[in-house]
Length: 266
Image (cartoon, rainbow, N blue to C red):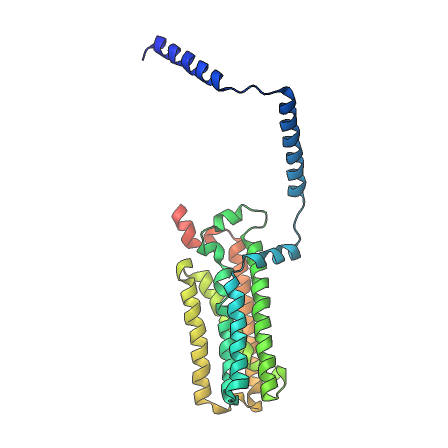
């Protein structure tokens, strides 16, 4: 197409789009402009208000899957059934440890949902970045899991007519070990296999309890409480380390937090 053809095409297009124009009264234009300015001012004021930590943590509750809460309630109900319906004291002592370890499973995958759904890079560009989201989720899920364990401890203590502190010494080592192992797995393995590794680890904690109770029948006696206290302290120290390492990896950026995702961009 030559220059004359291009010129002719431009004239046709200009006439076509001129015919499509709708006449707008000046008053309408003023209303639209005032609305846009008002919306811009409102958006600016909202953007300027920062959300407090407590409000941000509370907001994260809405992003936790409902089945997480349902599963934790179901675990507590199972403990109540074992304690008050089963009528076996030895089974109750063992079950409170196993179910405490299992409590972690229902919340652990949600901690690293940013990896699982591939939105970690997006979260790093937000004011409340991956590290903030991680802390909030750890607080929410940690509190809910701890509450579930606490309820099971009181249920078991009431059934066995023992002090809650004694029962807590039986429940906390497997709980802390399960938490720490799951955080370690979620930090190290690919997001797609993280939940499976958490299941395997929690099952291993439960299997270890079963094996110990079979080989050491006196492990739940008062003479063993010092050993339980030492195990709880060691497991808590490991858990504290894994929480710190998890937050550290989140603060270091995508390469450290989610190396499997980072490789796809390099």
